[in-house]
Image (cartoon, rainbow over all chains, first blue to last red):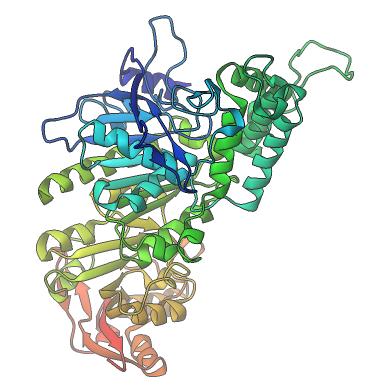
Length: 390
Length: 200
């Protein structure tokens, strides 16, 4: 708890608002990896800090599966929930908004303002649903590219993200090598493990089996609440380590005074998961969950480059900070080491550290002095070096 | 200055590509970057060490050097440095072979277990020596493969590598390295070798 207080003292970006950028009007639609066209495309984004006159202090943050453009700050003075990376984004924090111009955008196929399956399909005047085209991590990055160009930025000081956000960050360094000065990839992988795909599939099946899902056509009726909240519950299990879960909940009952154990007595861990599931349904679209988890499953830098990850990173120009967590079993440390090895073989500049923590995959979202120090020191030296080079 | 830094600095040419194995807080690499403009990389086993390297603007990855070298291509570096590290590795034989493969040259410096005061400590006290060179009790020592200057020469024959230079030294109170040319295996605190593979 002390750590949280310390983070809060570092300062908040305050009240922020979502901005929108729309591009890809016919006939200049966004061409997707599978050849399909998507347009017009709207990207919801937020920015924190100020772009300097040299335009060399811009950092792009990429969110994970359930994230949004809301990385930091609050939407109103009564808003109690800060952005998803508020621990690390703000004045004096790792992504120091007194120094850097920080951008975070909602991925396409998402449901927090960017074009996705819940958006209106201009061809029909109705929500896309399953008519929305298949999106890849690379497509998400290509859409972000248009936003970055729109903001007048030719080169990003850094791209950063954890989990699926890390996948996007890696993809950025490969798709637009000349536009990325450095990359911070946390708890991520060049391809998701079979185990990861398996968990994603169980989540999707939970949604498919909800009668309200109706093949994705539920926007004018009841949404598949039960399916989506179950998918979220399953996800949450994979984000925590066994130890963290044990320490957080143990075998405690939610109602500690209950003397009789019966079928309906609820363990704390059950009530936590259910609460997470219910909360999630309020803010997330089931079809987006399906599209985004599919994009994560299909992401495979090795496959893209003939089965050899070394080739994938051959032409990257960025310098890297890669971090993994000892108790992350969804994106285990070996996944990060594989990335680091491929970068090293190519003679790229890379820092790697495997951080000791009990927090599992979730660790990248939680306050940590080590993460904070590594990010802020890495950014400071990358910023200094990038200025020297010019 | 820390043990052997001055000798390493003398040996490394300007702008060399250098890998420091067991780079700790990165202070040797910083010195090499400042004074020799090297392109330096580090490998360090501890999370704290990596953080300190990142703080200094170095590139360092956390790995055990016993199994962290195999993916480098042959001759990836002008120099690979093992400064006071070889005696900490689980498989020095494997590490030496890998270092010779990935580096055009290697610098290996280590505490000489045959140094006179270490020898006499063992001789007269009959316990594992604990002194300024080897400041650990046996049960807490990271030094799991102690060796002597003569051992390194024997290894050169057995592993068929060339010794290009030998600058065995003792460490003076002023923090400088003093070369020991006369009976180094008895009188030098540290061994210092520059080596390369035979067919080069």
